[in-house]
Image 1 (cartoon, helix red, strand yellow):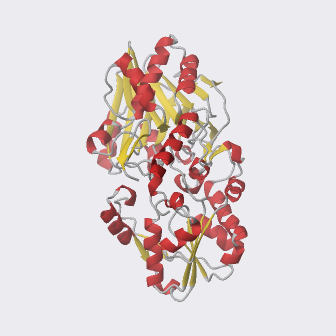
Image 2 (cartoon, helix red, strand yellow):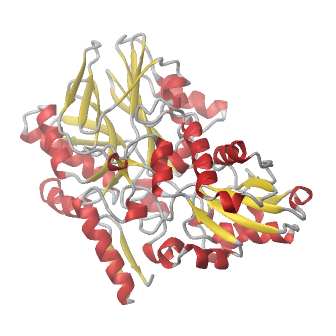
Image 3 (cartoon, helix red, strand yellow):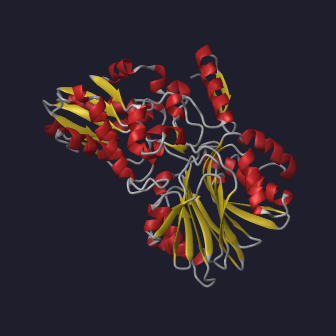
Length: 502
């Protein structure tokens, strides 16, 4: 990947129908297996007869045994939800990160809800204005509070009828959200998903336990064998007596995020019932590149991957072509300052320190570099320079994801439009700027065929500029218009304001 990107969150929730069972261990291991989806903060909420119990903090989920035991002693109860968060709404300063930690607990007229969700609300600003007239000033600037209070309001107006309330939420709240919540009134666990099903969501059963998660490995690690998927627009409730209800509340054309397959999801995840692990799909990406660019791959002596999400695609390209593959580009896992949240000068220094080239493997050889995607291009440029300095004869770059030309408005923290190298340059210019001999992007057909989901049921907005929801489409057009006019942009991504020149 040219830059490390992050998504909104990883979510995990579990309920036991045995009232004496504590579910902390399942909740802890489930969330830990999702830490790749959010690393700025974590939070746990449980419910027992004494009410809600919450523990949260910034940074990674703790692994020190003393800290884990402290969490376990506090988070007692048969029902709980958890969240590993990366902030794509609100600010990125300490105050904003502290205020935006999930799960969030809100209350209204005797009802308390704990909410954890993964995604991004596109029309959060307009909804916030409406809700503040009802609830007063918000405590946070995160769109989690918008979603939580909209649910409270809808429950109030529907006299606690969840199917009606969530139906209204699905009609009005635009964006991506795989959400779970605990209701203090009926002590049940609820899970629902936006009508497009943009972000992944699955659930499973093990004995008297039911669990919901962003990705299937969070269920696998806890021994949940009966795994299924929350459908777009579906509401699932599990009561403490074990009664489970599934309701298709609203229905629309699905638009699952295609970028999940290229970068975000764990390689051992199985997404949206594809019946194929993500790493196998990534292998297909590499095989597809071999077919599309057979003339470019034929002269290559050695395939290398920019670790680690491109490894599986590199293996696929190796299998299809017979060209040797070596892990000659190595990442220092202990350089933890992420390039995409650093200032320009600091980012360059981090990029330089993060990757090392095994010179003996690449010297004098024509190299084919496999990357999962290119966003800004900074890291790709630095790595190509290192390969050339190490003695590579030539460097051709193969990208497993198509050229990104538009920002994501559904929770992927991509660069702003003006920073997207794919929006500013054609492949030939990109290659020249990177210092590569060529840059070869996956075709849309190659991507879609490898995934095995029809194009009409995938979100490819960052590639095509065609967004599955109306407000996002309108906003994207305005972002591009402001960029092309050269004006200083004050772009409200509904929940986030940019005051900058692209």
